[in-house]
Image (cartoon, rainbow, N blue to C red; front, side, top):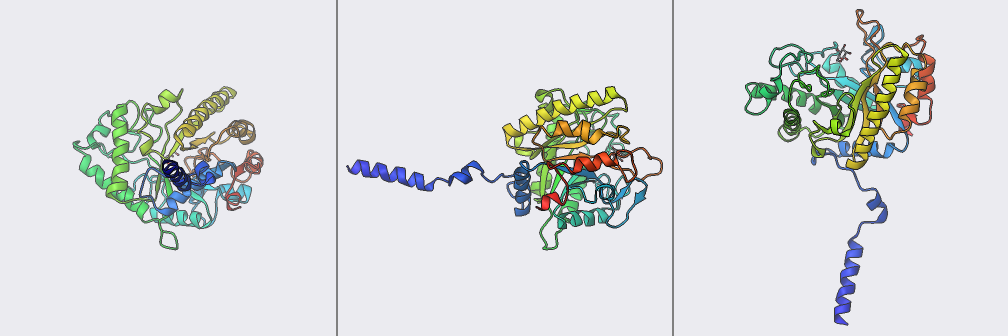
Length: 376
Ligand code: BMA
């Protein structure tokens, strides 16, 4: 009897200490940074919850400039065409590492910080990429003639100490993203992207898988543990891959990545190019969403688009039917260049463009989310 009572007590205590069912089914998601700020943890959880609602529209550099305009307060090509801002806005840090006042596309970092705060105040989300310079030659990120840049910045390498000063400047940018209440604005940092291609100094022909992973881990560790940057979610975004094995060949591990993504563009203007893109989207969405479900991560499309949108049904007929089948958080369309010498470098229609109606139709779909949709 005494034995039975003891046993009952043990069972009861363990039952009582169990989490409620609802919490068990839906535990809080924790980003890889165990010291992430409360706002960063909240953002991560919001991304998971929002997956049931739909896919957010993202646009690179949306507030800084657009097709044939630069720095007009409150303006955005997406807003001109649809009446609303994108739910997610992408920014580019290239040249912050060398202490420049503006980035490689002529956006002042002081303006960028202001745009990020405006986005945050509107309930929008920020994602950031970084085309950092080649530290060996002093040329751009696209200078990939060497195969030892990564090696030279890893611990023990000749450029390691200098590279740490570059990472410190990157960290300072993030630490300076302040909300009105003084907390740091949480943002997504998509580092060393498109590395399965060979067009950046961190690319597949420029370093070994192991060196790439070391570069990633070193970067996260430095920002998080040395610089105490705790307002970041980290996103991994190779260019198109053929399957999960290739996707994961350079993956630094679940402990270093919050968001799994990929970059994919329509490679040209022909029907064949569109067919190629459809297959690439389908295949890569399959890979990232399957992996995200397995590893309990968020999946997104890091970058995409059809330059100058020669197909005026691209959004509703090419993109929409494919992305709607997958649980992704957002789709980021690349920038609408303001530069006079790049008149065809744009990925979202501006007012008057033949694809403007199609884009309006696309963003009006119930599962496609703009800034106003995510406030509800
Ligand atoms: C590329 C192009 C370039 C730009 C770079 C970084 O894809 O848009 O013009 O400088 O991204 O934003």
